[in-house]
Length: 252
Ligand code: PEP
Image (tube, rainbow, N blue to C red; front, side, top):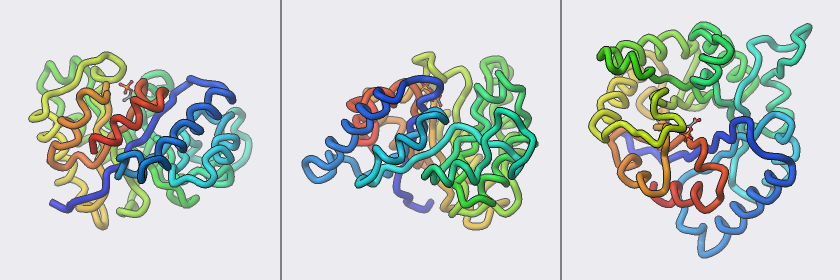
C-alpha cells in the first residue's frame, strides 16, 4: 500500500453566493495560515458552483487551496447551450472537476459512459477528474455494492487516466447528506476493491487517490480517514463551514 497525502475536497453543491464564497475562503485562508498551517497537512480543494469560480479563484490567491468545479461538458466547444467546457474551467483557475456525482447520475441521468466522456474531456484540458462511484440503498441491501462499484469504475474511468489526472471518490448514495456512514470495515472492503481495479487498469493506479464521501464530519473523520486505502474525503454539507471543513482536514 502506497502512503499518499490526503486530499480533502469541498463540494459546495448548489449553495452559497458571492459574499458567502468570499467569507468562507477568507476564513479558510486565515485559519490555514495561522499556527503553521492550522494543523492541516492534507491538500485542500473547494468546488463552488460555476458562477463563483472566477471570483473564488481570485479569493484563493496567496493560498495553497485548489479550485475545482462540479461538472463539465464532454464536448470541447460549440452548440451546447447551458454547458461549460473543461477548457473554460481551466481558464477560470480550476485544477479539478467532480464528475459522476450521484446527484448528477440521478438528477440528470448521467451514465458511466457519459461520465467517462466528461473525464476524458477534463483530462484533455489539463484538469484532474474526480470520478464518483457508489451504490444506492437498495443495491447495498441486495448485496451488490462491490459489483455496482466495479461496473462504475470500469465504465466511468477513461483510457489514458493516470495518477496525475485522476482521483476516485467512493460515495455510497445512501450516506450522502443523511448522517449515515458505512462501518470502517465496509469502507475498507470497497476501497481495497477500487485499488485492485485501479492497479489493474490505470497507469500508476497504486498512487491514484481514493476519497471517501458521505456524511463526513469532524466527529467521524479521524476514524474514516484512518481506514486503509482512504486517501482523503469528498465533503458536502460540512464543507460550507470553515471550522468543520478544516476539522475534517486536521483529522487526516
Ligand atoms: C457529497 O455531496 O459529495 C457529500 C459527500 O455530501 P455530504 O458530505 O453532505 O454527505
